Image 1 (tube, rainbow, N blue to C red):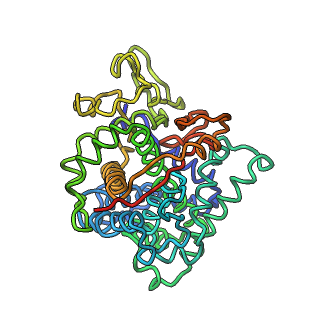
Image 2 (image 1 turned 90 degrees about the horizontal axis):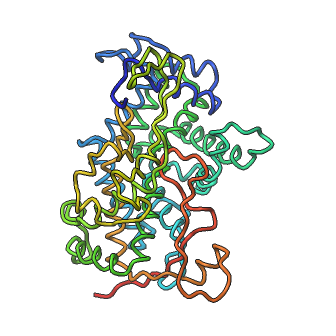
Image 3 (image 1 turned 45 degrees about the horizontal axis):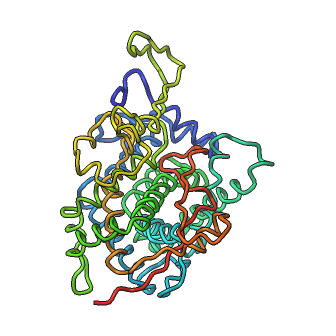
Length: 428
């Protein structure tokens, strides 16, 4: 199913998404034209439409090599570190949250700041903040309303979604209109995508809409998974202590060693993998384009196939009788589960997420850096109040994951189910 590209396809879904984001017909014709003479096809073994060639650029950016080194080691990791160490002069994002010592901090806002601020800066450079300092605010509104876009609800029911979508698209139109000299710090992926679309004559409006779809894919999952990883840790003092201890060697003399965390923090790595199992709810969807045998049946062209990862990740024959319970060391105890057919947090086949390795490492680094920089406690009163919990309960209620709305990856908590934490810088 995952590797079958002969009789099932995701291509028509990509085209449908461009219609849904309201690209012009001219733009869609150019993005989906089979043109062997186009610059993006010269020297390539396969003729590919521009809208799909962008996926190659995305993979090139995130596969091991100089493009990934520049993006991850050169930009994303330093951004995470500077945010956690409260170094505002080293960070472009002008809307950073207040992280004063002892002040209550929204865990969700912190994750958005650490990850989405860093990823946005790494991909699009400082110029993106010049044209829209409030981009992350617009994106987070989109995040909680994009289900209306997925279901194509009428405009009178979708004002908040449309406003945020249009604000993001307008941001990228203005960013594309900045002189190239002011965007030299953008990453390879958006640079290659822009150059290709300009070469085939796509308008800046349609370019911005295409970039928004990729922006959503790049930003829309890491911060959510990190939120749940942090939540599991800070609600379990013994787990927090174990992960802090195993990662302490990565932080010495005011500096960090990200490679140390990748190679030595087995408990943290296992917890990240377990969190992915529980948080990711998106299905794999394909169109049947030729007769496709599945078991003793044949799927005919025109049918759609959906593989529900949500159910696979709760398969009791694989995950035990209590698959909804968090077992932080599950993948440490049984590493073979990483290759289970019932474990697909990053999809599979031709649409396997190219950012999967970077996402895992970035989450682990941020968690370890936070735990070794701060003593972290939960503001139970503020957390419970936000969730509408009445009474004098002294322990904080754990946030509920919201699987009631479609998500293209990991699920958010319910809107009111944030966690408020108190950060005190560790001494010594």
